[in-house]
Structures are given as C-alpha cells and as structure tokens.
Image 1: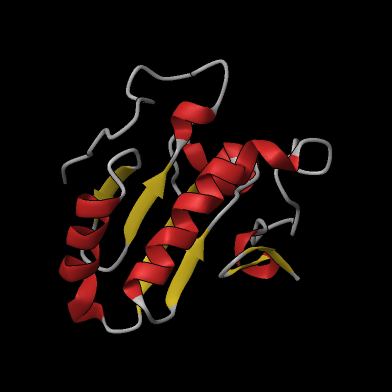
Image 2: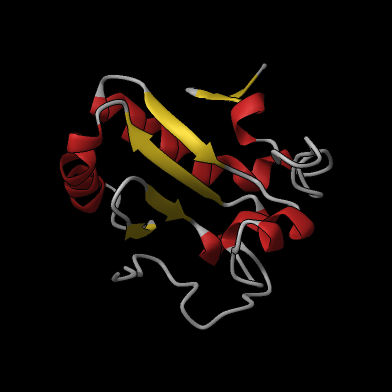
Length: 135
C-alpha cells in the first residue's frame, strides 16, 4: 500500500516491529509536507530510489546505532540511495539544488534526508530547515 507517491508502507515501516510512527494513524496529514518533498525528489530524479530506512521505533534505532533523538524515530526521515552507487553524488547535488528545506547528510553509500523541523517540540537545536550535516 502506498502511503505517499513513490513510498510504499513496507519501505517506510520500522524494519524491527513493522509499525508506522505513533502519530501516523491519528494525524497522517502532519507527514504531508515531508512526503511532498520526497515526491518532488523522486519525480525530478526520474528513476527508482531505494529506501534503506524510514521510520524506526526507538529500540530498533538504538540497535542500528542511531542517535537517541533521531529524526527516524519521528517518521520524518529517510535513508535513500540511487540504484547505482556511483550516482550518490549526482543525487545529493540534485537534492541540494531543489530541496533546500530538507536536512541532509551524505554518506559513502546512502543519503540521509529529513524534515525534523516539522517535529514539535524540537528535541535538537539542529532540527532546522536546510541544515546540512558534514561527514
């Protein structure tokens, strides 16, 4: 089942407990701005983008080494990668150019994107639009 264009619930659900974010059932509309940005990225890219990780429950986030206040635990984050690893730089530049509001961190084999600023209350100071992590 698609929960947004180009986003199947099996890709987005927690890989540990298969749940969606706690707010998702009652207030799915709060995720709309994030999913709209994701849709724009996917359409501009023009081919499939693999989703490594979406929502993570706190125990799973801890098990995979995620930060205690990870945006993944709010449901406002995706770890993505293009089909061809060599396209990481190209995809990150496209996101940089067109998705100014997203927070982004580029790794060797994937890109973390999030809209953690949509989470209220903000649990971290760097949960602001357009924040760029550097590795």
